[in-house]
Length: 439
Ligand code: 5AD
Ligand code: SF4
Image 1 (cartoon, rainbow, N blue to C red):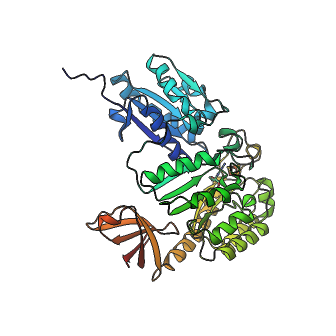
Image 2: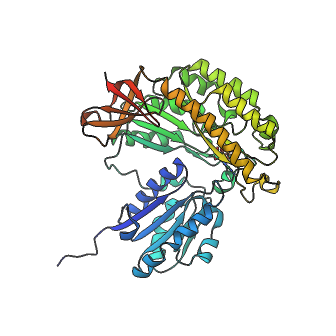
Image 3: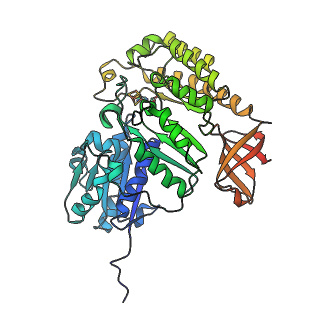
C-alpha cells in the first residue's frame, strides 16, 4: 500500500512589496522545507498559504484582508489548510489580524521567520500562532542552510535590516525595527554557497544597505571581500541613503570591477523645506554634489531614485524644485509615489494635500522620469554591453539577460549562454528592454 503520510505538503507564498520580501519568502520556504513542505505556485492545492506582506503605503492592510477573504471557500473545502500572514503588515497589526480574520492561523513578523517550524507544529495541533518579537538572535543564522537546489544565476542576499533614519513618512523603522547588520563572515559563507549552486550575481539587500556595519570597513569592506570569491561575477546593492555614501563606497564604484555601475539612491524631493520636513537630513544641493562625486568615480553609472509627491505642505514651488532636481541629475530609472499617510509616523499628523493635486504632480513627474529613462536606454544602441543571461525568451533561440546597467536585453543565443556573461552589441531599444546580437 502506498503511504500518503510521506507526501510533501505544499506551501503557497504570495509576496508583496520589496526585494527584501522576495528574499524573506525564499528563506521562509526553506525554513518550512524542514517540516516537509515544497512550494507550489497555486493557492488551490496548498496545505499552507503564507501572505508575505508590505506596509510601506496605504491600503496595504486592507488588501491583505481582502486577499484573506478570498480563501474562505478554500478553507471550508479543506479544513486542514493553514493560513499565515508574514511580513510588515503582520508586524504592524499583530494579533488584530487573527481577531479580524479568524481564518488566519499564524502571524509572523519579519524578525521571527526562523521560528516558523515550531509555529507550524502549533498550528497543526489546532492552535493559533503569533510571533512578532524582535529577537536578539540572527534569524538567518538559525534558518537551515540555503538549499543547494539548482537556482538561477542571480540571487538576493540580505545583509542588514531595519533603519534608524526615521524619515517622517516612513513605517520601516517601526515595522522592521532598528538597524541591524549581519556579521560579514556569515554573509560571505552564504555568498560562497550561492556561488557553488550556480549564482553569478548577488544583490546585497538592506532597507538602508549602505549603513551596513557588519564589516570593519562597512559595506565597501564587504564588497571587497565578496570580490575575492571565484565564480562570483557581479555585485549590486540596494537601497541606499545619501548620507551613508561614504568615500570607500564611492571608491569601490571606481575600482571594483565586479561592482556594477548602477546605483539606487533615493532623494524623495528636490525642495529643501520638504526634505527638512521629511527629516531626510540632507539638502538638494548636498545630494547633487554627492551625485557629481559618484559620477566622477564611475562616469557611466546608471542612477535610479525614489520620489514622493504631495508630502504634507508641498507647495507648487516645492514640486517645481523636485522637477528641477530631476532635470539636473537625470535618472536612468526611478520609482515615484503619491504620499500615503502611515499611521504612527510623524507626517501622519499633518494636513494632507488634495488627491487631485497629488495626481497631477505625480503624472508630470512620471512623464519627465519616463523621458529620461527612455533617453538613457536609447543611448545604449550601438554600444557593447555585458549581459548575464538568466532565461529563455518566448521565441525560439532567444535568451534574455541583464546588462551591467540592469537593462533587460534580448538576444538570439544558444541555451548554453544561460548563467554566463556575454558581450552583446545593442541594436534596438524598445519600451522596457533592449535587443542586441552576441559579439
Ligand atoms: N508614502 C509614499 N511613498 C512612501 N515611501 C515610503 N513611505 C512612503 C509613504 N508613506 C516610498 C519612498 C521609499 C520607497 C521604498 O517607498 O520613496 O524610498
Ligand atoms: Fe524609510 Fe528609507 Fe527613510 Fe529609512 S531611510 S526611514 S527605510 S525612507
